[in-house]
Amino acid sequence: MWGGEELDLDAYLARIGHVGEVAPDLVTLRALHRAHVEALPFENLDVALGRPVRLDLASLQAKLVARRRGGYCYEQNTLLAAALERIGFQVAGRGARNRTRGDALTPITHGLLVVALDGEEWLLDAGFGWQGPLEPVPLADGARVEQDGWVFGVAIGPEGVHVLRALRPEGWTDLYAFAPHTLYPVDFELMNHYSSSHPRSRFLGQVVAHQPGAEVRTALVRDGLLTVRADGTREERRVGPEELIATLSKVFGIELDDEEAAGLVRVHSAEV
Image (cartoon, rainbow, N blue to C red; front, side, top):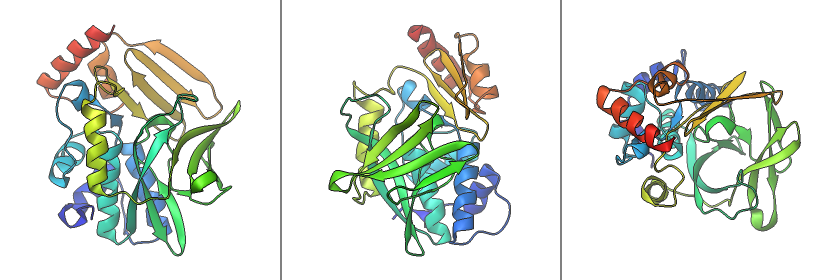
């Protein structure tokens, strides 16, 4: 379903820095999720440049594996799903409503994954940016996991809607909600079309890059660079056009060609 047979698994494992054997077990699932999240930054740079975002495996490998680029949820999780499928996991997609923006009713535009393993289901998400989990989260009502000081939980509400939550110093906050309804790559394609081209998409016309980490999580949105630690301390500073490319390289590990760099500086200059 996810094109796992097309994936160069060795190249993918080298890109994320995973060393050792892989098997369809929980140890591998945790290790690959964490390695992927820490190695591949969340970014919308093709959208900011007005380029199409392609989800076929050849395009994803060329961008995220062969180059030092990242991507947003559909790219990240499609690539992760292909790798897991190749190894032998059962992987399904889900579509979620973002709840980090308060009480506003948002459309279903976030793509994530669920893996069934030994009679249990696990939420996997390599594409929710700085707020996402480092490792799989048990998909059970009341589940709570701590990942290097970052705490995540799952609640199941009316109509079976699942909610991924994060524990902050001020209490629990919802990240997103999704129904237990299987989505397929074709559904990711549809959501990707909205997120990459619809005038109301928050990814258009601005530079976005996130990097979740064990100790520090970082997010660049427009000209604001936010650094957050597990204890809740936050630092913010402005990134001007003259700093943009260096910031994308040094902070997020994103390497750009000259054409991409020049285009992003123009976009960033228009933002500020």
